[in-house]
Amino acid sequence: MAAVCAPRMCFARSEYGARALQPLDTSPKLAQDSEIGAKAQVTPLPSPIVHEPRGPLPVLLSVPHSGRDYPDWLIDDAAAGRPALALLEDPLVDRLVWRALKRGCGAVIARTPRAAIDCNRAEDDIDPSVVDGARGGRVTARARGGLGIVPSRTQQHGYLWRRPITPLQLVDRLDQAHRPYHGAIDEQIGLLLDRFGCALLIDCHSMPPPPGATPPIVFGDCLGRTADAWVSREAAEIARSCGFEAALNDPFAGGHVIDRHGCAERNVHAIQLEVDRRFYLDEALREPGPGFDRVAAFIETLAAELGEALLRRQFATAAE
Ligand SMILES: [Zn+2]
Image 1 (cartoon, rainbow, N blue to C red):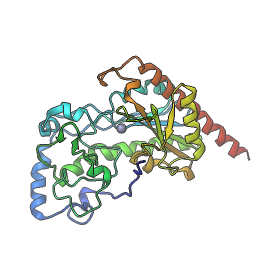
Image 2 (cartoon, protein in one colour):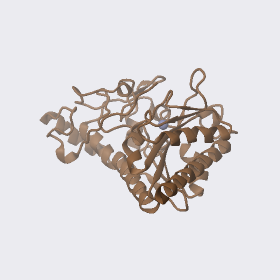
Image 3 (cartoon, rainbow, N blue to C red):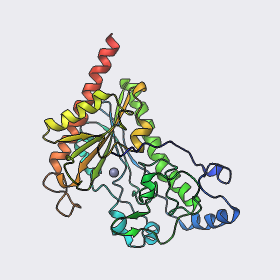
Image 4 (tube, rainbow, N blue to C red):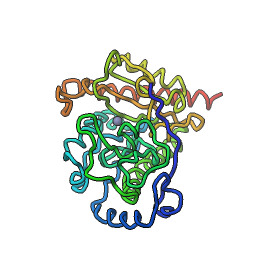
């Protein structure tokens, strides 16, 4: 079972050279190199697509891993080109949520590829092999495994990059894509709280065919920290009513998105959804397959029924 929620640390350009880029080394030489590196990175990363919630559901979807807008400089930096980077995507999950969007759910959808920066990682979740000068700090198991905030390697292609990035390039990526993503989630949750007094965040992902008896749907709530227990239980029930077996927190307990934004005390419940890619993609696991619409309908049902259940609880509490 993966325990994946991490403590947070914020980096800011204005604090660069002081302490905030810890665990990054901020020697003058590095800063000089960083300026050069930062200038080479000319095309900014795209900010996320934001759909404001409309209609009667207090639901926001997050899709952090389906971005496909690869700037040229990112592909030029990739040792094995774009195909190696594309393997990091959760393919087409941004399209898989279309029915839920049509139903009026809000959504924050990354356009920036996960290969450039992973919005489902904390700012300090850094693999030192991919950011020049990052050493001496905490390195999580995920970063060690190649999947920190800037992914470093995959099983198929090994180390992904021609060279590590500079600390300033990391700050650029945070400013352009990661911070806008989380800022948008904060803003949309604020709108839902103003309107409904509660909010449900569903962070949507897909998983490669898992080994063993892992069911096609895995929910995560960071072992109960990001949502009330009934929310996760009800989510699994809804999956089963749609014909999908579902597990909770095993093998994925949830990542940074739900850890950062879920807060049951504020009536913001956040769960992570993982869908086995074989259930909505073709055999090559790249294009929509025969199950695509069934999974899209399931996500719509999940959002609608869980959102309505949350509202019922909200009204019952208010009436007491
Ligand atoms: Zn994902």
